[in-house]
Image (cartoon, rainbow, N blue to C red; front, side):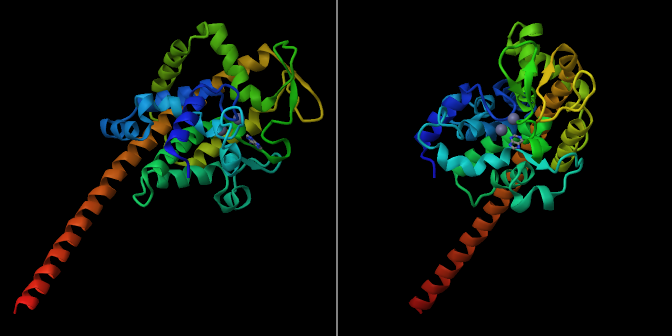
Length: 318
Ligand code: ADE
Ligand code: ZN
Ligand code: ZN
C-alpha cells in the first residue's frame, strides 16, 4: 500500500503533469473544477476531507493523479506497481462496432465502466480505510473525465486512435488522432480564443454547463459510454474530405477538422463536470446514510454488551 508521504509526492507531480493518457491536464482540470462548483455543502466537506491537506481541498489538483502514477517521469519510484490500473482508463469495442457490450468489452470489470462502478462503491465503503477512500476518489474524478473523451471509448484495432498518426495545423511533428482529442484541439482553442488563460476558458465551459441544464442520465455510466461511442462512430474518424481515417495513411488535419469538432469536446467537458458533481453529491448523501446506520448498529451493540455484563455481574454476585 502507498505510504502517505509518497502519495503526497505523487499528487504534487500529478497536479503539474502535462503529457498524459486521458484528457490532457487542461481537460481533466476543467472537469474536476466544474464538478467541485456543483457540490452540496456536505459533499464539499467530504471531498475536502479526502483531498491531501496541502492542496487546500482542491479537487482539481488531483485530477491527473491516475495518469501520473503510470509514468517514470511523474512517479519515478513506483510506476511499475500501478500498471494494473492502465486498462481502467478506457474501453474498446471491435472495429466499427458501435455498441458497448460489457461481457465482450469489459471482461472481469477491467475497463473504465467497471472502474467507475467499483470506485463509486469503494469511496464510501466503510470497510476500506482512509488512504483507500482517497485513492478511490482520485480514480473516480479522473475516470469520470476520461469516459467523456470520446476516444477513451474507442476501437481495439487502432487503440482508440493512438495508432492513427498524422499532422495537425501545419505542425512539423507527428501526432495521433487520440492525442488530438486528449489535448491538441483544446490547446488551439485555449491559445486562440482565451489567451491561454485557463480561468477564462473555465468560465466559458461553466456557462455551457449551465446552458445544458441537468442532462438526463446523470449517473448512467453505460449511457455516458454510448454517447462517446456515438461520436466515435459518426464523426471523429472523418477527415476534412469526409474520408475515414485509418492507421495505414497519415492524416493531415487543420482548421476544418478543428471547427467541426471543438464544440463536441466542449460539450463533453461540460457534461463530464456536471455528472461528476452529481455523482459526488449522491455518494456524499449515501455515505451519511451508511454511517448513521452503522452508528445505530454500534449503539445497539453497546447496549447488548452492557446488558450481558450486567447479567454476568448479577450471576456472579448471587
Ligand atoms: N490504449 C488502448 N486503447 C485505448 C483507448 N481507447 N484510450 C486510451 N488508451 C488506449
Ligand atoms: Zn486517463
Ligand atoms: Zn487519452
